[in-house]
Length: 127
Image (cartoon, rainbow, N blue to C red; front, side, top):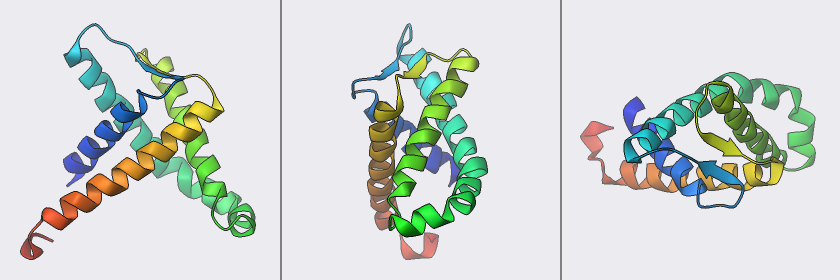
């Protein structure tokens, strides 16, 4: 199940590279796939570690904005993922907050849709 979630995240991140301000460089397709795999792992770890901390510290802002502050947090985490990818020498880059904001929004939507399709296609005894 973890591999499937990682694959869904890879597809979602790949789709964001069509947005202006988000770039995925690489020599060939294999290099790009490996970069997407690494970026997806980094994004998963960043979300696993920092998102609960951000939700706890920003609890009041989540309440005051009826959860819309979560979009800002997701954008910042996506931007941080780009920074960490750059530090690790991966050819994935997000140019600023707004591309990160829209990229995180696309990742959330695509991941939700793909996860829903996968869950719907599973047989009840597999769940």
